[in-house]
Length: 130
Image 1 (spheres, rainbow, N blue to C red):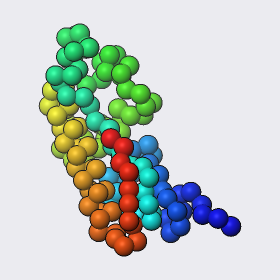
Image 2: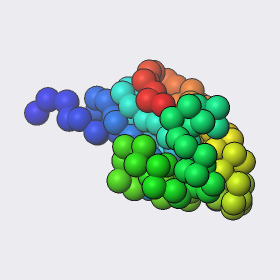
Image 3: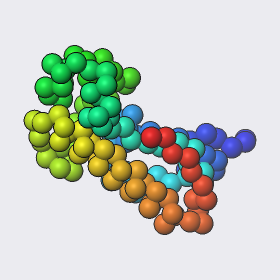
């Protein structure tokens, strides 16, 4: 039988168990394939960007209709909230929350990159999706 997609010891792995599946961020330290073709983490946009397309009333808190509408993944906001709250605690200010979610994204992606580098020579490559 040929190489199987998703097999950690033979072929490549799309590791979406954290972002798409909602596993804890620590899962990025495990599940290393030979080649990891995708992994990633989403965050809120910076406030300067949200100010360009959302009216002020939609920038009052983190769960307004405008913010929900601009998220492309059904459970995406819940995942961002869970991961950000886990690392930094809750905040009501959208400006603080947007910034902290970007910090969470950088932390999660950095954790995965560090783990992939530590897994050499088993893991010898990866592609990352923001």
